[in-house]
Length: 424
Image (cartoon, rainbow, N blue to C red; front, side, top):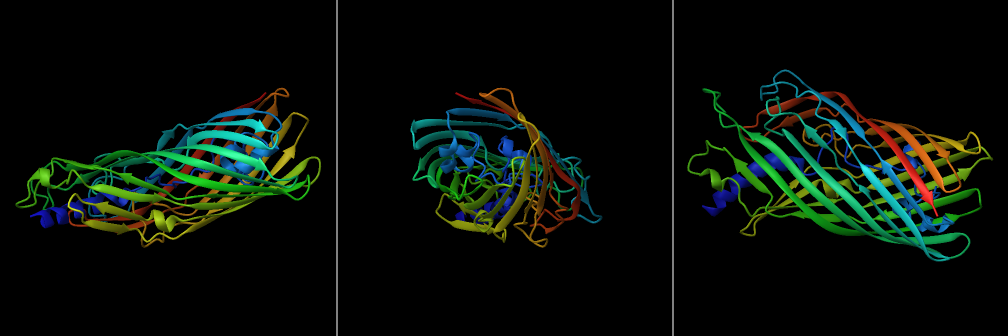
């Protein structure tokens, strides 16, 4: 009986944890961080090191700041993600409308001098994740109705100036994560009568830790490079699954369909990023970045049952890379203008993409401006458009799910950022 119960539960979970990470129709990784670097599509953010946001992007860069500094930013994002279901999807219902909407985000960065060559930093803000809400009657409801993965990354950092050219840094990374997902359960696979759907729900939070190491090397006063490595972070969501109104499996009572002691384990990817800053002349500077992320590890989700059995769900993800280039233009003594473009590869091929996590390649376009109110206070704002691709889906479901085919006819995130820094 226990084996049969676990087998049924596994099938239900595989139908639902296809989410395991959330889901914007666009993507999970949030480089933006409500910082001035949004204006360059995050190009150069590990090497710019001219504001307190370097406490998160490259702690070694804190040694370049001549005073203590506090920077705070607000970043509302509008997700416009509209899935177009092709004929014969098999699940019935509509397209789900806009699965996105407004998502607020905040970030705070602080740098304090402990000694002339030693700086302490503290930063907190969104790390990765967004959410979708297709509604309860759309054509893919047996794959997902709504869900989100919210993460908050808090870093305690140190930066040390080894000599006039080299600085090194490190951080302890604390990640708070909250995972929520709902899917509908088909109680009427033969389409007889009017039987209401059941629901499977995953909901749990977790506090986890990782670390980061970084360096900044200044070849000249005009050129510097930055590097950062952030470790993977293991998440374990305990007793995460519950069900409601599920019926139709002979001999298995409803309360057996959700093992109350099932744990979900997943990994937030380790990542490497390298950036360059070069001052071309008094007015112009060029910035660039290259990065790699271990999404193949994120693509695996482990299910651990109360009896000790373990099952791994593998999305067949590939590691990803990203590249970005941008410019600074010093328009006047007080005004600086910024622009940038960035590209991220897709972690998943068309044949393996699922509707709960429909990641595709991403292209970011950004514009920003910064104004120096005084020698102590600087404000900036930026707009970034993220094009998240078509993210076509051709997904064959498990029993009672049917299939789902289509693509996102609209798949954009509009990102607005405003921030202010205070030096003292």
